[in-house]
Image 1: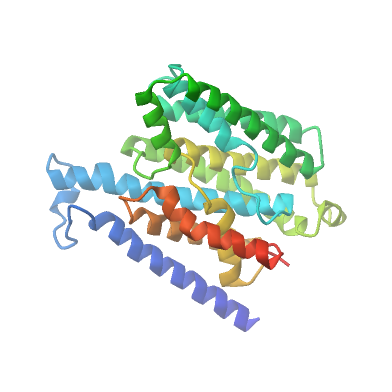
Image 2: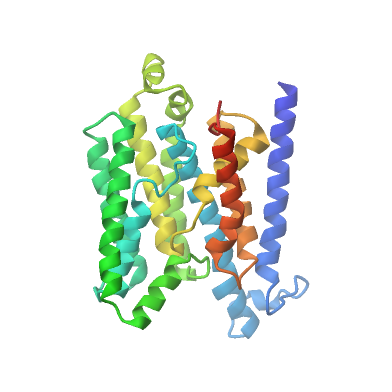
Length: 324
């Protein structure tokens, strides 16, 4: 027990230290170097340094942190719910729904209000979430939800393909850029909206913690322990959907974080207890996203794929899940 506690303490300490280092690099390194010793630019003024810090560096840092937390925690919850080591936050078709909303905004010319692409992504993601939640309220079999999500994803991707065929080159270029994912799209005004969505989504998953720990052994086992399986499933779906929708809306479809990070957290902490694994996954997700944001000249999903693909291949070759 002491050895396990020591591993957990060392693991969390290491992750927090890495986050601190990467946060410093995100804020103060780049094409324009900002010195920690000179903090005069931090105040709100019209200087170039101030605009770079508040309008570019801080939103990018927050986007990476919130995306890492959102996608990693959502991925962990969905992998547990479906008892599938390759499940991710986009398995329910939420990413495809967001892509449809963006496609309607950019390619078909539909207006979604002041926020434009952001609103389109949110509308599409929430529409798919509503469909999935309706199915979840009628069926107890988690496999059916997985099948519905995959079918929705294929159907929506087909609709997006039709929109792409009839779009002009400039609109298509913007849409393809959004599809690559980026932490640089979040504005300072949108930070609070993203933060609130992340907080609510994480709280829903925290409330389902007892179900997640019991669901590792199957829904029948959870029922024998007196766990409300239907309520737990709904909380997980709602929380994971909200987290994935917010991340996709603000940063585009960010690849592999939701699939790979829970496995990395398990490899580091060697525990299936979600009271440890959930915060561990959140911190690992933040580390990965902050590290990927350092390569600003390389597409975000290309960097994440370099980490995510080997992890997923390792899981497949190993033939097991993240929890035994």
